[in-house]
Image (cartoon, rainbow, N blue to C red; front, top):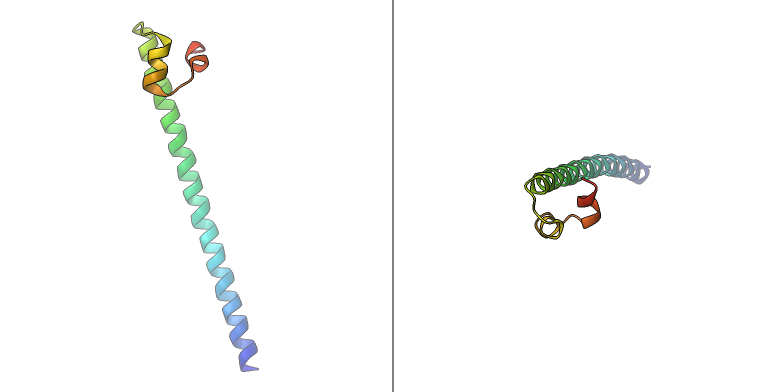
Length: 74
């Protein structure tokens, strides 16, 4: 009887821990996606400014890491 209670408590604790870890992972994944979007937006803004300043597409691609196709569509 005592062993069953102990196993049940361990199982509950494990499930609680697993749920908490899933919440933390989801939070970290969201933060990573938000960071990536922000970086992408920043690169695009810089590329637009460089394009307006008359910089060649290959130079813009070199500095921003964006493809020449993306730069052509700005």
